[in-house]
Length: 293
Image (cartoon, rainbow, N blue to C red; front, side, top):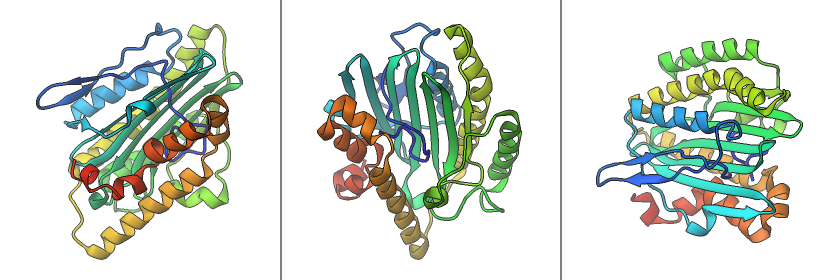
């Protein structure tokens, strides 16, 4: 299960860290309350930062249809949790967390824009395994790469500068497979970090290295989202829809975490998670009721 939509990493989200909803008549708010202390909950600061940035950019979260049986799953001391929301400009905001121990934590955050805005998708995969940490951040293209040229305006130019800064400070994570290259932007940030001891120092090292980049990528993305206007050209809209579907179908078919998830949670749950939560656009398009939300 792949946590991040646009990353080549292992990515099924799960839940050492809980993201419950608090509902009010007008607004929903994410609130992170991990059952573990900060020493072991590597990625709670990333969720807290996400919530703060969503508030800063006035993103009004709404419920997103998600079967309760897919929200939580425990297996062999591994817990998976998934949450999903929508907003007037976001078709789906997806947060998934997989937790097995301090040495097995995966956090995936994806923001898929509504199709009529023609925007890229935000994707963050944060993966901690016994051998080290893998991190991927991107504005995944839905058609033309939004980070190139003038199309993305000042925010895209700022992202290119942020990418250059963070790439220079972080070790490279490896090459993107040629078959998947079109699903990544020129600002795809992919890094691998070694583990350090003790665990508290390891967590702090990851946060110090990655949180600034995460915040830059998300803040600038939310700026673009806030300023976006819907497309009116039918040909452009058709191309955007095609690009979204190609990406989601590719990820659902090629998800590198499928084997791991299947071994932990079984075939049925894994396939439902992939097709109904992680890459659910075909299901969403087939449901007028979901589109109306």
